[in-house]
Length: 276
Image 1 (tube, helix red, strand yellow):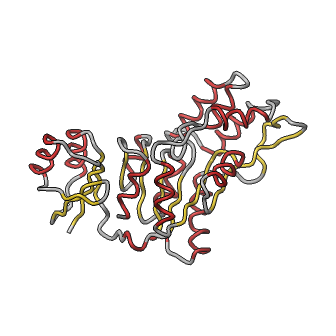
Image 2 (cartoon, rainbow, N blue to C red):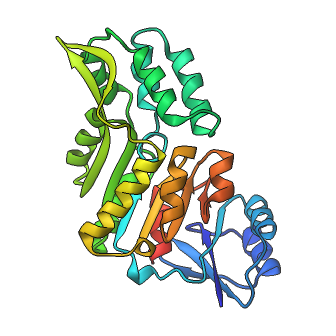
Image 3 (cartoon, one colour):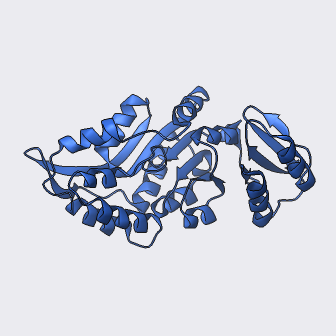
């Protein structure tokens, strides 16, 4: 039996009719609806239904067991938070358009992430480190549903790990603010109150994100199929492929094509639907 999730708190009359014509009558669980069907529908059918009712529709993998999930690992920039931190930092040194263009290409998978990060960070050379705090205080906002999502996971006894190709300045503050369990990111070089334009140590790119997932599995004594991985960019794909369930959150096209599930309408709290 295949389970289809409709990520909507309330369905109007027209939405309900379209769903019933396609799959049958849905039943509500918490903040979403579910339908059980005998055969797995095609991706095209799911996409057409989602477009028709303007809501997220996902099919749970046949071997997915919500009760076994023990860890959620998430990207930070444009996933947990609404901004790309490096782009906003670049705005303080008047190179945001150039940095943003590199970031966008890297997230689409058109550029090597590690090389692109080195290039972007080099453009920040000489910037006063006080700009980092300004970005955190004035520009960084959580994406919709983030706090509800993390609280819901912890209530269910599920650990939360934040991993980022961004910077520890931001992950460490979010770790404390949101009471996260684990976090890892890149360390910016600093000297005499200014950025040196270097990344200190190994870069947290696609492989490092996947490695962190496996490292945490060993630490928690769980298997990768007990992990949900969430991301939006190409550098999240290795991590997402390693997990038992992957969620593309308002993601780039290449990520949506390869992820097991996608969210394009609802906020991050809709990820709780998968473990209901």
